[in-house]
Amino acid sequence: MAFEALKQTLEQNGFTVTVCATGAEAAAYLNRVIDGTTVGCGGSMTLRQLDLYRSLGMHNTLYYHGISEDPQEARRKAMTTEVYLLSANGIAEDTGEIINIDGTGNRVASTLFGHRRVYFVAGRNKVSPDFAAALHRVRNVVAPKNAQRLGCKTPCAVKADRCYNCKSPERICRGLVVHYQKMLSMEMEVVMVDEDLGF
Image (tube, rainbow, N blue to C red):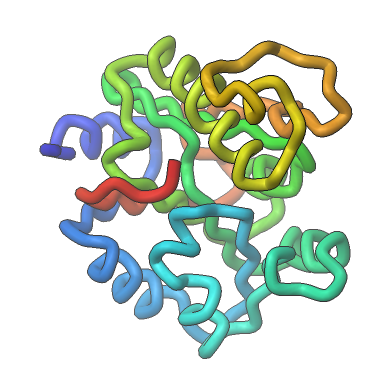
């Protein structure tokens, strides 16, 4: 996929954009620019595929609930770090909106305020032609796959086909954040990878 137009659009929206040909290149870049600091991470198959939880943790103080004995405390500590990493559930190619949906809220909250730098790491599969398509993908592809991965008994996970806008106590799509532009209070960078990563 050619990212030139999307890169320009995201930059017009205030984001710094780095384009990497491969996941390995993206991981090397992030390990170079994030060093000797405190790092918080959201739950992300993309970050896991790039082995960033392990590699960044080797030369930073890293907080991620998936590798902690006390996940809730790790989420709280991750909220106070200098740097925060997550992926994007969806990106609208034409206008550059970045969409994330969350159940606990730690991941989306960390993209709004508090950190010095936030990195969105996204594979080419996260990009949709426009906002409507991106939102449809987030709700009907990404959320069901994540619900399945987490072992939820929601209709979308059980039937594995679409969002049912359910009232299940295990529902993981409870809050939606759309970044129309970079937040004023912190540096925000989108690392686009020309590979399929995550859901």
